[in-house]
Length: 329
Ligand code: NAP
Ligand code: GLV
Image (tube, rainbow, N blue to C red; front, side, top):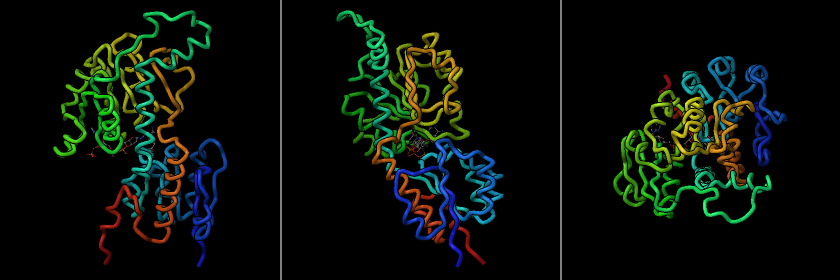
């Protein structure tokens, strides 16, 4: 029986041996993602695709991949993949939930602390030789301890943020598609509120929803207008959840005090983006899950999903399990 053929769209931070034992594996060695045309050519001749969030896996690609049996993404978010198109072709799509929750919550917390306490500005100030003496009003920011935190999207990462906030004695508000059960609310010390109330009452607002038609530009002019002038926005979810032009206006006009974002629209952020001129904005290059241990676990989970798909077994972490519901005959 011919071996399965697999295309992996970047070098992974783990060994590929167990995948190579069952498949012919080609790895894209570029630092940047394979161009779309390369993906189009590869997908015609493979059984399994292991991709990243930087790869656009759209309907055209999925329909051309007539031998494709599984798509496995090394990320929890999968907004770059046309999942309905994959489902229509009975192709399971895998992702990597859970293993990156704490790493992403840690980075979110680092951004929140850095924005509040002006860590990046302080570093720039020091390197510029501007540190002359201790000054009573130098680089002042708001308290984090005992402030009000608003969490938008209360899934795995949103809840991990609540656990961190509890240690800072914060008042924790959340909004999500569904209210979680009262026992969990009580143990995390969180209050479910409407989106608008969360925006009005929070000192820090942090975004943890997936990117979808419902969350695209969830934050725009009207939302910034509701926020406190002292508020700080954190986004480690997806760039397109926030309207970048509206964010620039809100930050440059003082409608909100600051922001810290790990994700932008588009990625990478163009070097001439007006956002990069702002001192009250911190930007990191989409490194939410970037701890060594986490990335290795993500890669292994993506390989597990891929191998299961190639063997015709159920993916351990499948975003479209309905592909298994169809009764044959
Ligand atoms: P998750 O467990 O699925 O949590 C997402 C939460 O958002 C769920 O509670 C979901 O509600 C809620 N939600 C969905 N649509 C909503 C809407 N329109 N309004 C309000 N809430 C909504 O996902 P996760 O593991 O926490 O990850 C969240 C996202 O973070 C990922 O999708 C990814 O885009 C991003 N992420 C980024 C990084 C990074 O490197 N920066 C790393 C990891 C993840 P339901 O339960 O009702 O669906
Ligand atoms: C990273 O952004 C992920 O979705 O895993």
